[in-house]
Length: 214
Image 1 (cartoon, helix red, strand yellow):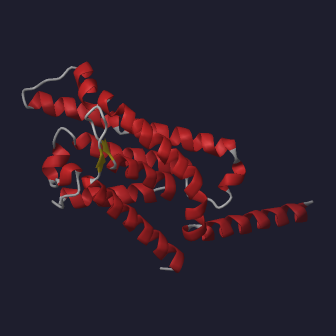
Image 2 (image 1 turned 135 degrees about the horizontal axis):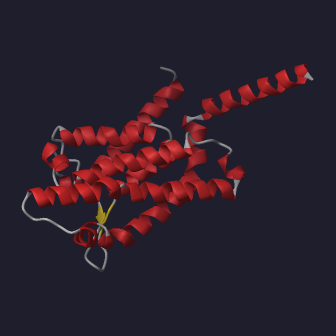
Image 3 (image 1 turned 180 degrees about the vertical axis):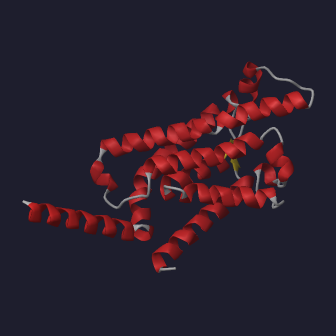
């Protein structure tokens, strides 16, 4: 494993550790619903690591929680959490990170030079990344509650598991976009610069081939 690949592996592991630590981090809001930071770091992992590396960090966290390490919300762990009413949201964290990572790809050093188009792409990638968290989350919540004899209408499920978290998710969303725009070129410089060198070499070879053909 070369130094660049080793750095990337360490960075993925670091993000997994940060997501684990976030299980005990919550920012209280006046309305009484705290801002949990685990989905923030999951989506941020996709935004900064790109490709499949972001979701890899999330999957490491999920695996640790599944085997009983208390890394899920409120320092809980075990398969019971994944199979419980909030298990769908944990799956949603992985889906969100995967979507953002695949859409944005690996970070590039020259991203800031691409201007507003790149910013818009990061904006929409992160927005739908946060939305995807709820796609498996809400149906799973409703199914488990129904199985436990406490059926919920879709409106009730929204009022319990979605609407109260909108303010916090919006705050996290804008912070994620800002950090993605600011930090992706920095991450590329330290962890992905060999990709840029390879791309530059391929472009140079292509130009040379075109000039020969002319």
